[in-house]
Image 1 (tube, rainbow, N blue to C red):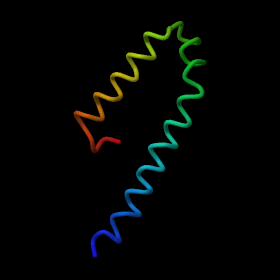
Image 2 (image 1 turned 90 degrees about the horizontal axis):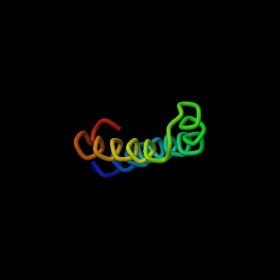
Image 3 (image 1 turned 30 degrees about the vertical axis):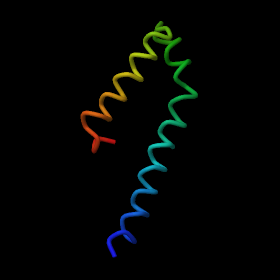
Image 4 (image 1 turned 90 degrees about the vertical axis):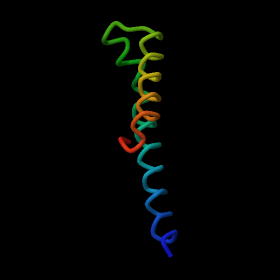
Length: 60
């Protein structure tokens, strides 16, 4: 009974997560260029994002 309500919620959650990635990744090189940062800064951003996902899974 609970699965019928949970599954659509999970689908919406994954859609929003993928939408966020799809919006940020294409413009990330432009942001790095504007701020004078390089590829290492992009790597640090990805590292911090993944660590946040591990430490605080409910934060999005």
